Amino acid sequence: MKNKWFLLCAISLAGVSLFAQQTKSIDNAILEAGQKIENALPEGSKVAVLQFVSSSNRFSDYVLEELINYLTNGQKLEIVDRQRLDLIFNEQKFQKSGYVSDESMQSIGNMLGAQSIVTGGLEEVGSVYRFRVYAMNVEKAIREVSYAVDLSNNEDKIVSLLGKKGVSTQPSTTLNIGDIGPGGGIVFYRSGKTYMEVRRVAGSYNWKDAQEIAERSNGGYSNWYLPSKDELNLIYQSGVIHDSGNYWSSTQSSMVNAWDQRFSNGQQGSKGSKKTERSVLAIRVFNK
Image (cartoon, rainbow, N blue to C red):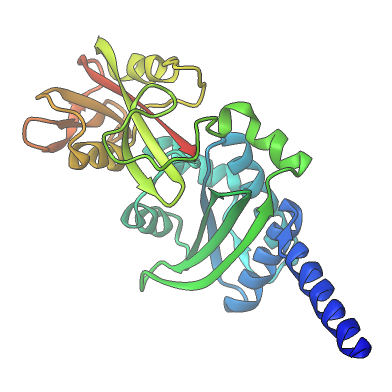
């Protein structure tokens, strides 16, 4: 009986130890994700590390930079240069830490001549953060690699990278589409614990000023930005903005034109002169 008791205690302690080991540090998670990508993709493949969705630009940039460094130093894959990648993102006005559709990411992958694109995201789940990284085949639009792990929510580096503005301080109750978000905007998108909220900006502005005025939107948070054309369409489809305004997106179509969208009928256009004044929406990503 005594031996049985000791055996049960040993099993119990082992279970506690295993549970405690389930969370990873951010650097170990990036290392393991890099190893999985490196081992799964054919040697010599051209890979573009495109996007990491989180509530903090600093966190997203850190993950992207560290993952690119690891894969580059491994010399098994051909990694698209970060400067070239940033150029494409700036030209298309995509947010590396915000929502970009699979179709748009495929388009960027084709522009870069990449066989695979790498994306990922961070989602707050209770007392941990769920860290996910995927590799998608550009031609076939199928996932080739999938990696997921939990990160501790009290690791100093994670807390520093996310910052106080990166994590919602609201109660843990679920928000629905149409509810008011922590920044005073209207929730128009939800995926698990990741949300996006939108705020109207008073007045009309040319395209350049629209970006600046959107970023200055307040509500106690500093991570607002002008939505891409895909994000703008998400807002329209959600039905949370009820007007017939013509809104700017951050997506350029040429040096002198940018995409906009009429909320009267949902029609998107690529020939809006950047000098023309349009209505403005500001959006931000947050975890809950």
